[in-house]
Length: 459
Image (cartoon, rainbow, N blue to C red; front, side, top):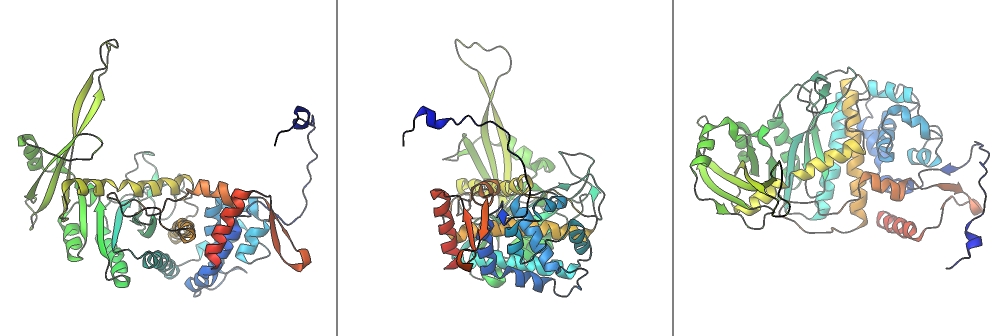
């Protein structure tokens, strides 16, 4: 609709008078989606069951405190002290089912009294949610990625130690090991460890536990996994073969002089079609001297053009130096080289999950001095991430089928995007004719999206 120039500008530039008073206004009207979602999951009762054995040290049940931490991550706040910024928000209170939100001191005190039994039940709850999604998806093949991620802090906390930390050298840290499901982008489980351990420390039993948690519930599922060079060992390969898992593992071939000489002596490299840069390969049945079994080793050579430094004759050409990048993969898969290379390179999806959880969640924040409390805080981040993705998966069908890189079947909104689009909406709670109503500003795009989510959650 066209408007006149005079109708555009109003000339009002005066600063308005600021006044604070108690009203039923919310900054997070989009939490109504999570209210419907949590009700469908019966989340409150299930969290209460996880921590039902603990004696309450305040008016707030430990399960309610954990639910509050999950909401805190979803809203995007980083520190526990930030809970005070929304302590009077009516939608947060309604989602938790309380008239007064717990103070930061209460949250810290309740976290300090948590025990390992409650943590294990909370982890089991997370696994059951991920497995329930896999059951609904009807998948026949599942890809599990294993990798660690540094969680550092300037403070001193129980179990922290100085270890591998390339970005913050010398800083104390934890080094948890994660198991991620590639098809849904959810984290199945985590092994919490001090920061001074190797990537493979304690991983064999953890890998077995993750695999068996799937095979016990989904015995028909074909499981495949991919790992980096830190996991390359005879013990890990043997454990994966014993569990009937298809695997690809990067080989730290700088540790094996034989592999280097095999590459140097190779004259014929078979081409790998469909790759971004020219790629060649050859394969061999090989084993380190200390191993008992021979396996399929793929030797990959990729061409990486590198611009030449120094003066350039721009009127003639831009010279480039061609360099080769080598890597070796050990596998028990029987597919061709191209599919195996593409499959193994799909591990980058797990790094995307870590990046989002650290930048938009609280994965790299250590709030407490207690080992168990920090474990529970980390698990709250993981559950918040998984539930946000589950909410999106329930609202629409998969966007794509299985790809060679095993990309997630759904194209997810990032946490930051999801907050901006749906959660951070101003609203007012009113009761016309004694019927509770959440009123938001009219926007057809937001209205249709809310209806889509609520229809999927309430049907």
